Image (cartoon, rainbow, N blue to C red; front, side, top):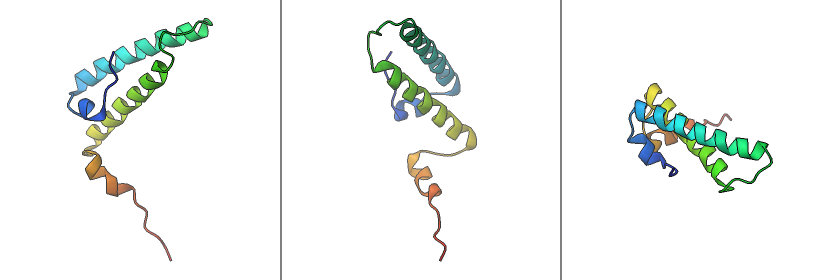
Length: 84
């Protein structure tokens, strides 16, 4: 399964995101099973990329439900004013 970029995820609707999320979790579970049994997975870095993609999907899904927009709109909201 290809690793998704954030712009690809933002183009999906909620049902597609949920479906992709379950697929990624199943794939991660298989890799973790291989690691737990003492084996070496086919692609060593794939678990890390899957975890990142899961986090990316969950983040974008939360942003959509809270009404936040794209990265450009969110960028200025985390700034903290300095007190003197």
